[in-house]
Amino acid sequence: MRVLLVKMSSLGDVVHALPAITDAAAHGVRFDWVVEEAFAAIPRLHPAVDQVLPIGWRRWRGNLPRYHRELSAFRARLRNRQYDLVLDAQGLVKSAAVTAFARGARKVGFSWSSAREAAATLVYDRRIRVAKGQHAIVRLRRLFALALGYPAPGLDAELDYGISPGPLASENGPCVLLHGTTWDSKLWPVAFWNSLAIRAVGDGFPVALPVGSDLELARSRAIAGQASARVWDRLPLEVLIDSLSSARLVIGVDSGLAHLAAALKIPTLVIYGSTSSALTGCRGAVVKNLQAEFPCAPCLSRLCTYGGEAVTWQGQDVVPACYSALPPERVWREAGELLNADRLLHL
Image 1 (tube, rainbow, N blue to C red):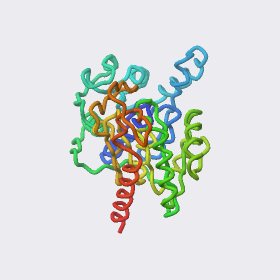
Image 2: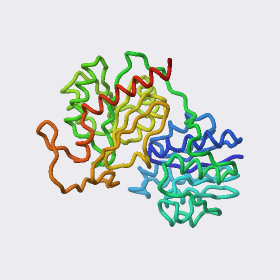
Image 3: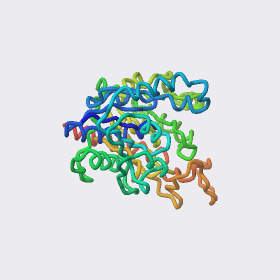
Image 4: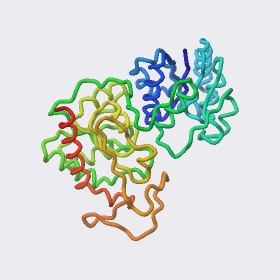
């Protein structure tokens, strides 16, 4: 069976789809994949994906007339091939529009109650109900199974992202600190990152700080100014994957790169405050999710609205306040336990 998958963004959502691709491949399904151009390197890693169709929607949406030629070329490429099935695994109006343009014998997606934007379901020939309140990976694996006609894997089924890590990390591999994220409410305090970097360097780890924006560059430089850390240049995703694969340890907030690190089988510790590790927690061979235990967490809000009494760490107010439950000394202790578990796993 030849399937066109529409799963455009974000980075974490793209990573979450990989285990479902692996499941389907075991039943003879091959895929082409429509994905946001910035994330095209991820589908190319999976052996069951034959063609990647990058889409520049994030660039185009601000000025469609300016990019009409690119949009027309994308539409022509999209319609160049007939598929047995077109699967919208995103459930948004933008992904449904792509699904509508594609040529497929059947067009399938989430049901009205399951999709993130219910209007998206109007273009599907078949609508599949997948209960909300489950982890994103579980929902996608079930959607793929029901759409493609094989038994849905159980909750305890083996998880295989189907992608191979790059060069294996050595004992000298860096501790990569992923402080960047799209939500202000997920930003761990810079003072915490400073303390964590100092602890890592003190225990003999080289520390690396990836950069994806001007704000992240400024934050990385501030952290590096407190510890002997290396600030990575802005790297294309395919190059960043190789760099990330060399890490001995990754510590980050809930972000696409943290999910990618977990998929690459790197020991990964992820800090959760406003978001829920039950719904979007990192999953992988050697992963630990730390969920802040705080009255209003997880709030699932992009902005912290905590209005209670201020909480402090070493005399400084902690913002967002929920992160007071996850100070750097605890995070570093938990990271050490994760590394010990990884050593035992490979004995």
